[in-house]
Image (cartoon, rainbow, N blue to C red):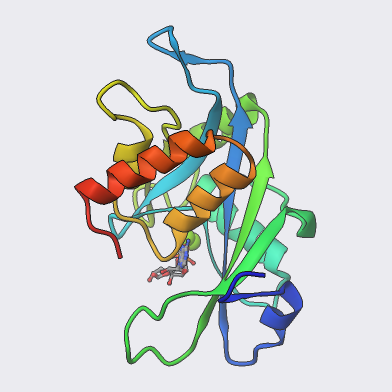
Length: 201
Ligand code: APR
Ligand code: MG
Ligand code: MG
């Protein structure tokens, strides 16, 4: 287990910790940009109220709900439909960087990944833009991650040079590698290019 990470059980044993759960929803696709650039996979992220990119999800209260039912509740608010999330979808749990030096209680972020069909992703996008209670408030819109690299470097590198909440950027990068959604060499090039163009926290 990498440093900063803790098991689900250790995380739940922390009294006084706050917990947040977020999920990466993704699907395979045969679609091609401009009829020639294969998109290969769809990964959903969101533009948050604070102008940062992040994954759907939010704060859960383990004394009143399981982590997974709390995440499903957050998803119904943010995406407008009830998506069942199970323990098998859990990837890792880790301490979030303190939001300010004076912040009193530590936050543990639990990360989940769920594979769907392309049509289910479309359904999520439709609901998020219409029936979701948080649409236009906590969530400004869902976005798909461009996983390709265009001549001149546009695509993934440009996406990665935006600003992300907490460790959402590294959750995205590690998931793309672990699930083989982008070739390691291409990801490395995109990361190097994005670091050259923008400073990151
Ligand atoms: N990595 C680390 N921390 C994250 C990540 C991430 N990938 N994504 C979100 N967070 C942090 C956020 O900074 C926030 O403090 O987790 C916490 C909860 O996540 P949100 O999705 O923002 O929570 P949500 O329950 O949807 O929103 C509730 O959060 O910021 C407040 O006042 C705001 O009403 C809002 C409240
Ligand atoms: Mg929320
Ligand atoms: Mg949220």
